[in-house]
Every structure is written in structure tokens, then in C-alpha cells.
Length: 185
Image 1 (cartoon, rainbow, N blue to C red):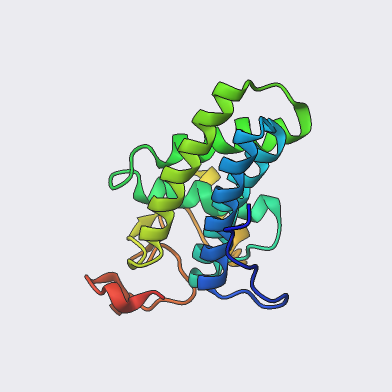
Image 2: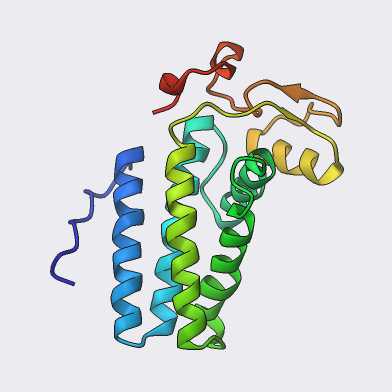
């Protein structure tokens, strides 16, 4: 793994730092697969997705410091962009269930982990694209969405039926909802 890019310095991680870490983790996942280390391959695949979800969380001003918050970001993004990226939810779910959980349980074969890393690569590509477009409009239609958005935003005043032209981002104005690719880092 001599060709790995260096890790960013410890401390605050910029969006570019997190994307670089995600790409590094994908490279490590591929290396671990070559070494037949299914446990590390799956964990690195999940880490690549988690770092890209953290970028989106940071861009939107959402809480993103623990597993539950990262999972909430993933679920919210999947619901929000399903029409644009219909396979993103399955990819994230697969990498979490097969990759991350396999790290703890060692129950997936090498072939399954190869598929999982491939899903991770596709998900990371989609998540990186999403980091460069403004959030999409979103209306809260269920209690699950309500709880998730309250947890991400810290706004307990949100209600079912509330709508945001910027997906309840805390860092985007209503003006960003138009076609403005420069609205996000």
C-alpha cells in the first residue's frame, strides 16, 4: 500500500480532507481484498462512505459526530435524492450491513466483500457528486423523517408537513435552491 496518499494532519478535517480519506479507504479496501482480509476491507469500505456523509452533514450544518448521526444523514440523503440516484440507498445499506457489520461478525465471504467494496465505490462517487450540488427541496411526510430531521438539525419545532427548498440545510438559504452548483463547496 505504498501508493496511498498521506493522511491529512489531525484536527479539523475539510471537505477535501474527508474526500481524500474516503478515497484512501477505498484503496485500502481493495488492498485488503487482495490480502483476503474481509474484515478490514469491509470496514474501510464503510469508512469511505461515512467520511463522505460527514462532508454532506458539515455542508448542511447537521450534526455528524457519531454513528447514529451519520446513519441519519445517509437515510435523509437517500430519501431526498432517490429520483437522481435510485441505487444509492441500496449501496449504502449494503456497505453498512455487509461491510461494517462484517468487521464485528466475520460472516461474509470474499465474493460478498468484493461486491460490497464495488457498492462502496459507486456510493462514494454519487456522494461526491452530491457534495457539489445544492440540497433538494424536501417536505416532511412521516414521523420517521420528522425524528431524523429534528435529530440532524437540533430543531425540535419541526412538524410533519414542513417544507424546505434546501432540504432543511442550516447553511443554505432559499436562494441556493435554484440551479447554483457553486452553492456548495
